[in-house]
Length: 264
Image 1 (cartoon, one colour):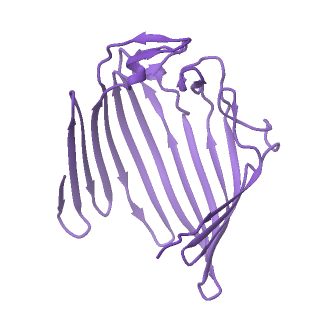
Image 2 (image 1 turned 180 degrees about the horizontal axis):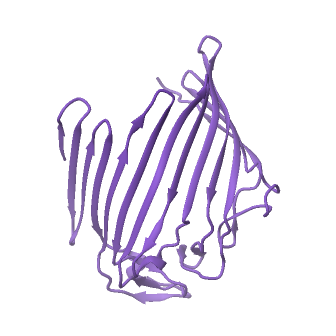
Image 3 (image 1 turned 180 degrees about the vertical axis):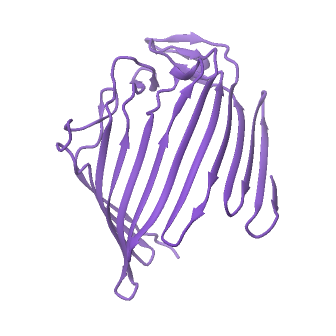
């Protein structure tokens, strides 16, 4: 690893490794008060299952080339008194991608897939102890291998909450709600025989927004979570949603979580 600091707020990092046979990973990162930029290039072998498989329903022996992934990402940082913005963009190219096709057979793409992913992260103090966070992404797929990736075009996450200490700061509490949205797409289907996901063109996983309400508590190092999942069930055009063909998402129910470290 190579690391350097131009000043307290300006630094860069670079690292890489070689993996036999003919595989590697190279990463570079630049950080400044206003901009973060990164570059990643990786070449890796397909999985053993993608190369050789023998089962009751599927058999193959493949001689696939290594998969190549290159990505450039940039993030602008803008901080103001009551809010912060993080517009970002990523450009990714995937070559020789290996996937399971509509017939549940391992295939290697003969064309590249290009992904352009602009996004925005934002945080805002609404006044006093009320806060709001937002994160959204748009994915544009192009290239001859674009159809091998089934990714929702739009994804967004919205969260608003009240954050306050109580009882002389012996208890910290967050109470709020969160909404997650993704657009429709022909999501990959699951194959029990392969225990893998594969392409399909028949089942459109429709667009849906899921709303949760939550209360987070922290007492010293102990954290307690109460979350009511999918509180908008039966309030939308559809009574629920699918995460992938044939598999529904969570129904409305209450989650309880406790993190209690038993050591100092």
